[in-house]
Length: 85
Image 1 (cartoon, helix red, strand yellow):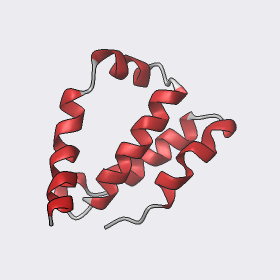
Image 2: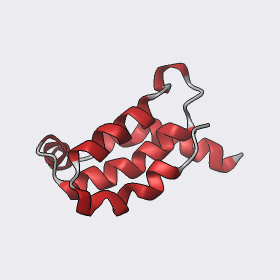
Image 3: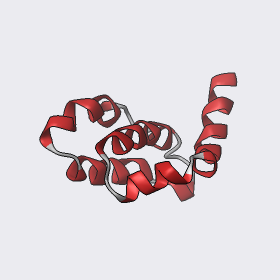
Image 4: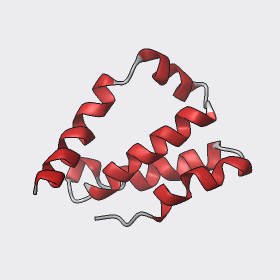
């Protein structure tokens, strides 16, 4: 139960505490930033039952996968394979 609360807290907190530099790297489609963001999407997938998050994790991962080159795919495979709950 503590783990669930931790996950729910960070799903909502993380977007508000990332640096502006990180956000700029995302806009520039920097592969390292996209890989990091892909792992955040796992938290979104685990909270897919929340109406305003429904489909967001999967959708963002699809976008990230398309934006990354083939050489970066292994770095996000784990995130893609995680189940939606």
